[in-house]
Every structure is written in structure tokens, then in C-alpha cells.
Amino acid sequence: MQRIYAGLAPLFCNFRWNSGAVVVLLASVLATSPVPSFAQDARVSRTIDSVNNRGCFDRVGLVCTKPDMMVRVALLQSDGTQVGCPDTVPIKNFDNIGPLASCSGVLAVTPFDVLISLYDVDENKLPGIFIQEQIRLSEWADGGSATIPWFRLGGGAVTIAGPDANLTFTPTITMVAPKFLVPSLQLTTSSIDPQLGERVVASGTIFTSEAVPVPYPGTVKVGWSFRSSSTGPTDMGALPVPARHFKAHSSDRHPISIYRTFQKTRNFQRVGSIPPDHGIV
Image 1 (tube, rainbow, N blue to C red):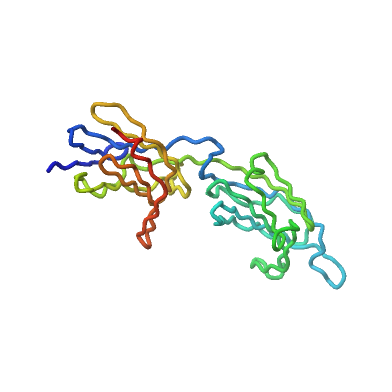
Image 2: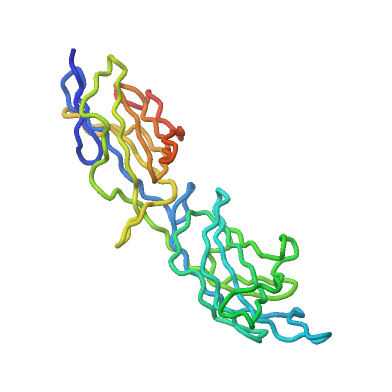
């Protein structure tokens, strides 16, 4: 019985077929456009340029005094999760404030919306934060927060005209490219026998292409191809791959199947596969 041996090679793993030719399964992170068709990571910075209150807050009897305003910003990702930014430092007793520091290099998965809330806090409790009342930036949202959709974030300053206040902010969005941190991925075995239905599983995590790399939280488009000792690379296709804790299954002339793994339960969720007719004949 002849076995097929697999070993680490840039970038993925080697397979020795019954014909004796060495075949390398290659994985490469594909370049993407500035506005990707699938989820891509970005570093987000945001400055609150100005806030102008028009409502009646901090009432003393029938008299409206000036509020103590604080802005809260969150990035609402397409899967429903939120990436929070630090609250702005509350400014006491002013109707017009800004500029204010907000998000600074926050990593988020695009496309995302921006959720902005404005509050009047209790100046007597500072530096602790005790919210007295929400200052409405929208008439439609529950509580009065404003949601700015992704498509409005690429054209410079954005102005919100709310029923209680106006707010202008400037977002800076820098796309972050993915990369393999090491030139090879982990293999579950060094050899397989396709006749027994054995398969090799390669797994790994993709990182951000930055001076200090961190795990890429989004989805990465990865190209898959075969290369043998007698032929050049043969493209199989491309699949969006969950960048964190993905596994790629492959056996003799079977499709590449990509799974997302969950470390706590060690369960697998299939996220896509390349049909066998795209493989080597």
C-alpha cells in the first residue's frame, strides 16, 4: 500500500500522488479593492468636529441652563456586533463644543455603520459618568441616537441635524491588508492514503499586514491552486476564509473545504468549498 506524504512548503503542503509526482497545494491571500465586495478590516479614526445644542437641558425650575455634553461612538458591524470607541471627555456648561477626540485606529470589519449618541451628564459626579438625559440626534431611533450608514463615510465630514442638536464628525478609514504571519500552515499528519479516505487538514490564522500584526478579525479571500513537479500552478478558485481559526480539508482529488472552528466547543462550521471539477484531472 502506497502512502501520500505531506510536508510543509511555502505556502501550504505537499502531496505525493500514486503517479509519484509531488503536488503542492498553495494558498495565497488575494489583493482587494479599497471598497471590497466581502468583509475586510479597516483602521478607523474619528474626530467630533463640533456639537451644537439647541435643546433645553439641566433645567433649574423653568430655566434651561447649558448641558454637560458627552459623545459616545460605536461601529456597528454587519453581523450585529459593535466595536466601541472611548467616550469623549464631558465638557461642562457649554452649548457649543468641539473638536473632541473619539475613535483612534480602532480595528473593525467593513462594511459598518456608525452609531452616535449624545448625552447630558451630571457635572457633580465628574470624573465619574452619570447620564442625566439623552440629547436627541435622531427622531427615528430608540432613544435618539443617530446611525450613519457605511456609504456616507467616504466623503469627508458628515453632519447630523437632530431635533435637539447638530453634530459634525470626520471619519478616517484606512483599509488593512491581510497576510500569513509565517510561510506555512499547520498539518494534522505527514502522510495520507487516499484509498482509505484519509485526508490532511491544514489550519492557521491570518494576521493584519501591519508593523505590529494582530489576528485579522474579518473574512479574507484566499486563492487555492495546485503545483506539481511536472506542471505549473493550476488555479482551483478562491474562497472567502474566516481569518481566525480556519481549517482547510483536502484529500485525493477531493474539493478544498473550508471550515470555521470554535475553540471552546471544538465544533466545525462549513463555510464553503471548491468543486472537484476545478481540481487537477
